[in-house]
Image 1: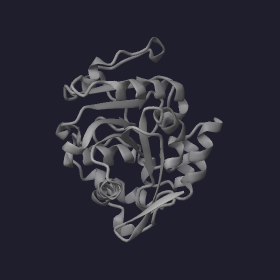
Image 2: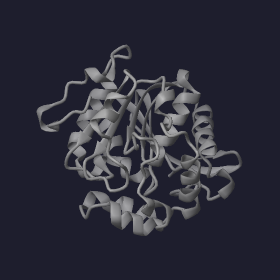
Image 3: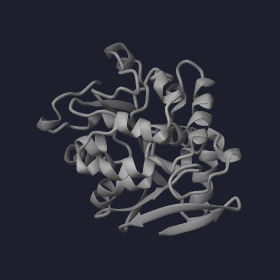
Length: 262
């Protein structure tokens, strides 16, 4: 177990591989641990980091640090502490909001961004998220496959106040959310069967900035990286391999990915 002291509090993280830095940011359920298969896949070409945000996993539980601003600051301090200068970010759920806000605030530090299970209408989150405890949310959102068991176990470590505080902040965002302010190449990934977020319509997809792209996983729920891990890791590898100057919309989907929303 690796840890650093940031803002006088413990932050837990893990790292695998060598190469360009890649940071995984977890969502409202679980911790860094459900990223292990994706980290292992990416670690052949990248130095893959995953950290527990304030209030989750084995990081400090301090309610004063649960705002979106503080979680963004956590990533900034983490990069500074470890001497990381430029990254690709993979964010899921809450982590996708943090990663997007971080990218807007620090465009020179982010090479590219993958935002998973991010509501493309900005605020389309199921009300159940606001009133259900972490363990119950895990039972609702995770399937019964063995790959999901780690996230289910780690959910109990979350401080429910960390979830509700983030949701209060998200509610205060403008209706279009953060997408209109993005200036970093971004790939949005959504599960067709995700009960937590409102699926985008075709019109929503067409309104995305031209340096962003959206891909739908038809057999996935809220956790595409667990529900269709092989497919997800292939997509991740292709996205990370794109030259910096190439628009994410140039991604050529493999036949087994079935469907793309431009």
